[in-house]
Image (cartoon, rainbow, N blue to C red; front, side, top):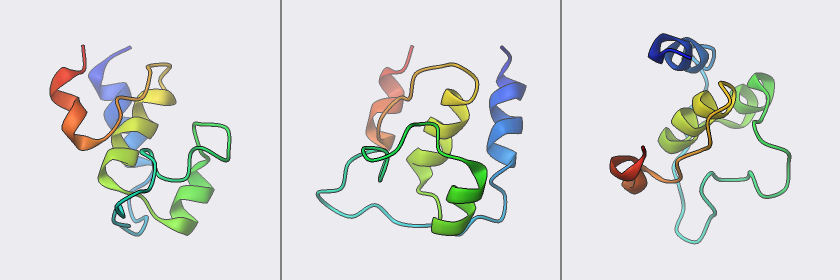
Length: 76
């Protein structure tokens, strides 16, 4: 896997509405009730948080999700 694969995956969500994280919601938001990674169609419909964009791009490239934005400095 290359970094470009992760970037290219994230580009699939270009144009999806931005949605903000709300206190008390899981990170990634909404992934507790469906199998991750979520589909492009679903994320384009409901929107994407900043951490979801990164987590989704990692997962579709067979990397584990990193959590919320505060955890990325700890990602290997």
